[in-house]
Amino acid sequence: MPAGMKKMSNSFYVFVESLKSTYQAGGVVMLPILLVGTVGFYYLFSSWFRIGSDFFRQDIQKVIKNLRHDLNEGGVEKAMSRLKKRRGILASELRYAIEHAQRNPEGFRDIMQVRMLGTMRHMEKGSHIVSVMAAAAPLLGLLGTVTGMVSTFEVITLYGNQNPVLMADGISEALISTQSGLLVAFPLTLLKQRLDERVEILTQDLKLGATIIDNYFVG
Image (tube, rainbow, N blue to C red; front, top):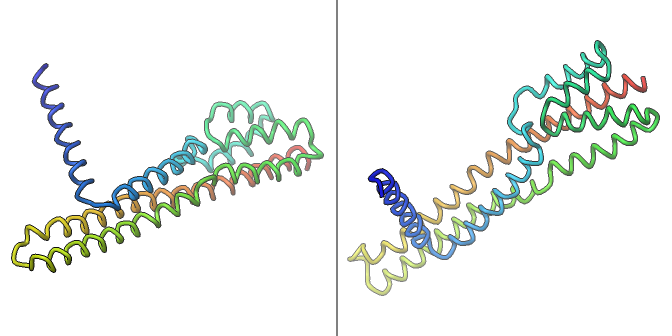
């Protein structure tokens, strides 16, 4: 094995062993914290993939501006051509709106009301679970703090406080579990806030886009 690969393999082994020892030192609450983090990030990333590239793009407002300009200056074909070149849920829903407005202008408003409700639910699906997991993680860390301190006091009761080595396990459990809970909760909370803001912006732009399309086809 080349020296570089061997060094990388050794570093990876040390990293895995470090994670393993940290997990074991954190005590019984580490598994629930791990599960909470897994569930929270799963639903968070699921929402991200449902929204698509619009989750991070900063030029969402340009879509509505370009839609109004294209419909007024170039007509439906120009608007559809530009929307087809763009990825994300906003462009997809606006293409859907134009197609149905062309086929059924009279029933367009009713169709879009139902469609928007479904789209909002689709984007927000699982977001409440992310909030619950973000709130549960630090509480589990706090529970680990309590169990770790209880373990420490049990050691003090049995052996006194003359030997700090005996108390190290309980203190480590208290600190590591608290740290782990916060490490899970902090990114979940920040990313959930980003998700809520993005869903709100996309919802407003969808309503505005639907209004522009309605004015163009229905008047």
